[in-house]
Amino acid sequence: MRFRHRAAALLATLSLPLAGLVGLASPAQAATSATATFAKTSDWGTGFGGKWTVKNTGTTTINSWTVEWDFPSGTKVTSSWDATVTNSGDHWTAKNVGWNGTLAPGASVSFGFNGSGPGSPSNCKLNGGSCDGTSVPGDEAPSAPGTPTASGITDTSVKLSWSAATDDKGVKNYDVLRDGAKVATVTGTSYTDTGLTKGTDYSYSVQARDTADQTGPVSGAVKVTTTGDGGPQPQPGDEVKLGYFTNWGVYGRNYHVKNLVTSGSAEKITHINYAFGNVQGGKCIIGDAYADYDKAYTADQSVDGVADSWDQPLRGNFNQLRKLKEKYPHIKVLWSFGGWTWSGGFPDAVKDPAAFAKSCHDLVEDPRWADVFDGIDLDWEYPNACGLSCDTTSAPNAFSTMMKAMRAEFGDDLVTAATTADASDGGKIEAADYGAAAQYIDWYNVMTYDFFGAWAKNGPTAPHSPLTSYAGIPQQGFNSAEAIAKFKAVGVPADKLLLGIGFYGRGWTGVTQSAPGGTATGPAAGTYEAGIEDYKVLRNSCPATGTVAGTAYAHCGTNWWSYDTPATVKSKMDWAEQQKLGGAFFWEFSGDTADGELVSAIDSGLK
Image (cartoon, rainbow, N blue to C red; front, side, top):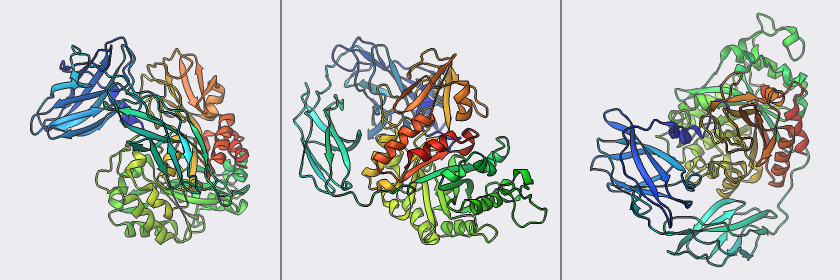
C-alpha cells in the first residue's frame, strides 16, 4: 500500500556516486560506438558494491546491450538490479532489461550489483566487442514479423501463425504478446495459446529477437474472440468496491470512520480493508492498540452520535466500524495484515503456515470484536522478492502454502491478498505462485500504482499509475494492463482480480517540461512526505494539464505531478469492466475530497 514503492530498489542505484572508474568500454551495433565502464561504489571488506555504465558514444541508436567480464576465482555477484546478470563459472554476463536497452546517441544507462570477494572485473566485452569503443561490431535489429493469423479457436485456446522476420545475423526466437504482455517465447513461427477464458476478446502480436537478443518492432495485431458465452456475467452491484482505512489516519490526518458517512462514501462501497495488523514472531498481532480498540470518541465524532463511555468493553476504530456496519449492513470489513512496513515478519510466519493461520484467526475472531470482521487480507510485500526488506528464505510456493492454510482456518470467511503489479520479465509477479494460490482466495488487490516516483530524484517524470504502456515509459511491464494480463496468464481468473487506484499523486520538482519524460532535481514537497500528496490537495494546488496512458499529469511552476482524477478513474473502471475484473480497490479513503469525488467515480464506473 502507500508508504512503500516497488520500483525504488530498481532505480535507486542510478544515483550512486561514480568512484574508482576503470576504463573497460565498447560499441554496440553498426555505425555506433559505445563504452562500458565499471566503478566500485562501496566496499565493506567481505564484499562490495559495483556499478557498470554503458554509454552510446556513436551517432546511431543502440537497441540492446550485453556486457561481459571475468572475475578472479572467489569473486562473484550476489545480487543485481537494472540488468539480468548470469554467469558460467567466473565469466559473467549482464543483459539489459526491457526498459533500458535503447540508448540514443550520447545517452547512458547504469546497472548495479553487490558482490563478494576482493576481485575486480577484467576482459570486458560490450555486445561482443571491446569495451573501450575501439571496435564496432555490426548488428542490426530484426525486422517486424508478419501479422499473426488465428486458427483452431476454441473456448480456451487459439493457434497463431506468422511469417518470419529477417535479420543480418539471423533470428533466434519470437516473443508472443497477448494484450501487450509477453506470454511465450518460441523458436518457430507458430504458437498455440491455451488456458484462455471462453467468450473473451484477446489481441495478439509477435516480436522477433536476433542472436544478440535485440528485439525488433512489434508486428501488427490480430483480434481473437474465444468461443462460448463466457459464463455468467457480473450483474450490477456484483463488483467489489473496496477502500483501505488506515488506523494511523486518526492522528495527524484526523480522518475517522465517521468521515465515510459524511463524505457519502459508505453507501457507495462494498468492502473496507482495515490497515494494518502486524506480523511478528510467526503470528498476527495488533498494529496500534490505542487506535484499534481503545481511543474514546465523543458524540460528535461518533458514527451514531453516541459518545464512548470510560467503561465500555470496546472503543476505538473497531467500535466505530461496528456502528458503521449497523448503519450500512451491506459493508463487509476485512482486517489487513502486513503492508510495506510490516511485511518482514511473513518469511518466519510461513515456516509453520497452520500455526500462523490459527494465530490470525484467533485474533480476527477475538470475542471482543469478532462481529466487526468478515475475513482477512494478507499484504506481503513481497514473497520471494524485495520490498522494505528482502525475502531470501521462502520457497516460490510459500505464498500458496500460506493462502491454503488461511482458507482452511477461515472457512467460508473472506480471504484475500494484496499483490505486486510488477509484470516485467523476471519481475515480482513471476517470483511467487500467485496462480496456484488463486484457488484459495476470494480476490487479489493488484497494486497498480507506485510504478514510478521521485525515488528516481532526477526523473524521468512518469505517471505513477499508468493503465497501459506508452512511448517513453521508463520500464516495460510497469503498467496496469500488463500486470492484469500476466496474472491471467498464470491462471488467475479475471473475476478474482481487482484494479488498484491511488487516491494520491507522486511528483517531482525542478521540472521544466510539461509532458512526461522530463528531468527533475528531486521530489516535490508534500504535506506528509516529499514526493507524494493527496488528491484532495492536488486537484486545487496543481490541476491536471494532460493525460497519458489512462491517467492524468500536471505541470505547475517547476513541479510535475501524476494522479488520477474522477475522469481517469471512470475510464479505468470502464476498462476493468471490459476485462471482466472483479471490481476495484483504492488506497486510501483520506486522500479523497470531503464529498468523496473519487469514490463516486468508482461507484458510477462499476455499473
